[in-house]
Length: 265
Ligand code: HPA
Image (tube, rainbow, N blue to C red; front, side, top):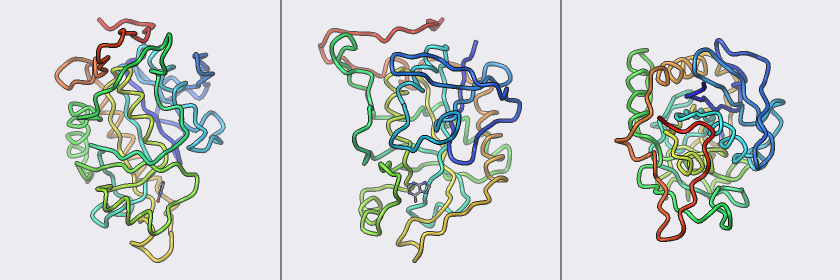
């Protein structure tokens, strides 16, 4: 039974050892597709089977619901990002520890009221610190540099940011900017999953450089990142101690728990 998942987008359409035949899952939000990998790992291409769904149109809820219904407990998301600081170098990796949401119009919660209930996910530690620690250890073991603490500023896209927007995101404490990190982090939390995000910098945000220059050839960096993520998930155990399981507070409203196809043992 799948326990772990890697979600990825731009430039990452497979994983070593993955089964190219996609599996389509029906969810209350529409279909989602994933690929089986070795062992208890699955791979979910967030932009869909044909890599043609733009960030603002991704069916994030279907993707996460599908993983949840398969029994997935731990998810690592790989993100193409722009660096808001030179301290996150071009082609460099960064582990997310916080986020800023500048998206709009996305279906970003399962708790929509009525039968779905009302719940409020605790965001004091949005990303799983236990999973993050294992990722940093794996990066060190593989001799790969990774910035250990970064705030992901999520924009709606599909356009890039203006120079003034980049100044705003930097002033707010953003370290990297991307278009898909939210609502993924929030939905994972609503489902009580252990969730980590790793960004790979494809460009410096405008303002740091006069003109936008997106690096195309990142295959070596992508392979290094995926190896770290695969190794980190291997043997990672569900469990308490990080606050991910049961991160939703119902604040006195009727507790509606989202059904799980495979209850945790
Ligand atoms: N902005 C938003 N999303 C991105 C960027 C960026 O500069 N680079 C890669 N994804």
